[in-house]
Length: 308
Ligand code: MG
Image (cartoon, rainbow, N blue to C red; front, side, top):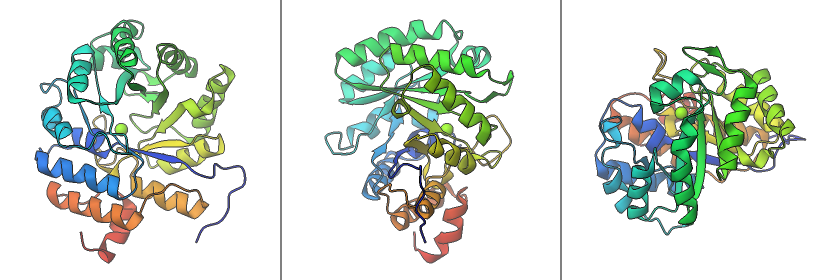
């Protein structure tokens, strides 16, 4: 049963990250055929955008070493964009060779994570993004920018809001079409979400340029999503079945599950275009391939009603 929600958006865009962010954080190596079928099933279930893979060096993410093979088998000319992550110019070259039209770069809001994940500094990371983003834009590609550790950082604790806004501002100035603000370790709470979004608004960043990327590690992802909806956010990242544990905590729960998000949006009467039954069937099928139960509470609640 849905109930109208005054002040909330009428529709939102769910940015599906399961094939990339989900699978890169699962220990199992999934065959190319299964990845391609997974992406095609997500598109068929109505997801309006599905991040397909990452052109990061296979040494860092062996789970996605087959990125070129996967992309070669996808319908890149279809109506649903299938973005790929590009960590640097070499990754961009591979994305251009593959014919990708949408790419994403991955930034850090903190000094320590920039050092550990990007082998750079908070300030220095932009030097690497500049040629990558400029060349992508010159080639006519859409460039999304992820920002990790927007709320808390496992080494630095709570992350100053102005540091996150300054990072986002620089990425927008470099030409990012959208920022995905990541709560990478899932410690954010609803009040913090509101404060961060108000700080971006205070710097003149319109809310349409912002997506939220919540993790459910501490059980806060839907509460945080609700707070972001109240602030007018209309793009939410989510991972089918809740794929992808949290690499920074001993928890099976990382990414917000797409099904959990869809269930809440349905209750609020907010449009999203996703067929929940088809999505649950897809996540149940993928859970069988990974030989582990889905992290999503909604998938676990509903999957007995469907055959995978
Ligand atoms: Mg994630």
